[in-house]
Length: 110
Image (cartoon, rainbow, N blue to C red; front, side, top):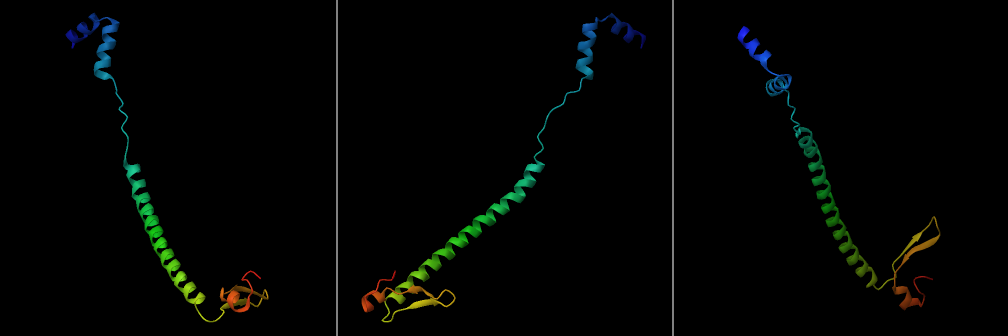
């Protein structure tokens, strides 16, 4: 050990610092931890897929309802009677078929 100490004593302070930095320095590497990202994606992706699926189902249901409503409206307006809906609480008609114009001469608005 005496020889090693003599060799180290012969180094200048700058050489000792460079030697110490080379052998005893701690280097910290920043590494991104993807665990939290994967956990968030595992939660978010199924939610987004569920919302997209639900939205598609709603659009399909709305299209079916619109088609059914159009068929019903065509049936009601082509009938030989005057269809109507009367609200007893309000004491007024809420719907009167367009046939009232041709049969009675009144407009639907009046």
